[in-house]
Length: 312
Image 1 (spheres, helix red, strand yellow):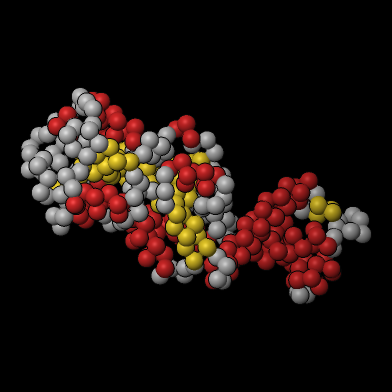
Image 2 (cartoon, one colour):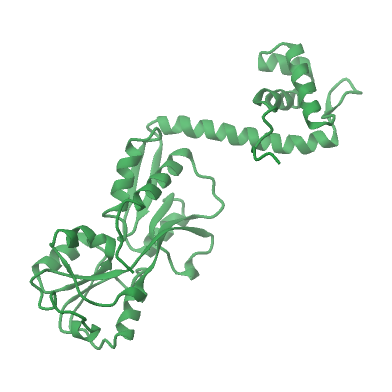
């Protein structure tokens, strides 16, 4: 059985002539509209009927009328022509200054995946204006549902907010508790969570995707009362505060991966394997994306394969 998506004998001219003859109700008018000779249009219709092994038009009257089989084929042919037209328009739009891709970047990906993806997209044939939005998950999901964002890159939202949305899993990672190298706990092996209690904790806010995961780690680790909590979604503030104070920054591993590699920050020796979770693309369900948006999503997919993740 052939695996081709389309019978290679059926050409675009067959579809164009068929649709125009149906629209005009005759070969003569169709040939004029298409700028082709009448014999050429008649030949294309005859070839198409031979390939489909059925009559597409009833020729008994003065005006050509679709047969039942012709009506069935016309529905699919019109949809195919519309899809091709939309594809051409998307490519044309991508070349114009009016095109813009709007994506949301959660803290998990805004310092590595998204910058690399945008740089790659800039070199693609579909390069256009890019708007990158950041902020809490709830804010970003509201913008996605309202059509103000094309898609979001980050951790999988909770199931109760995913109605009407779909998620594409790209990779999984876990949380890291990062501190400056001079922190009293920086060199301690096999830490227990209760040993974090005396120190300021930089935590995601209550409505952040990873906050329930952090709370679960604390409960499972027997954590008691924390003396001082700082809730923030700002990576730049959290990094600056952690570098100047004995604070403990709770964040997805990829956000601080480069800081850990160069020794600017140190990961505490805590078991965070239970925090491992999916990261990917959240988008509206059943929505046809334009060429620039699809190109940006491909750039995100490529970028996720270029960064090492925390070991499980």
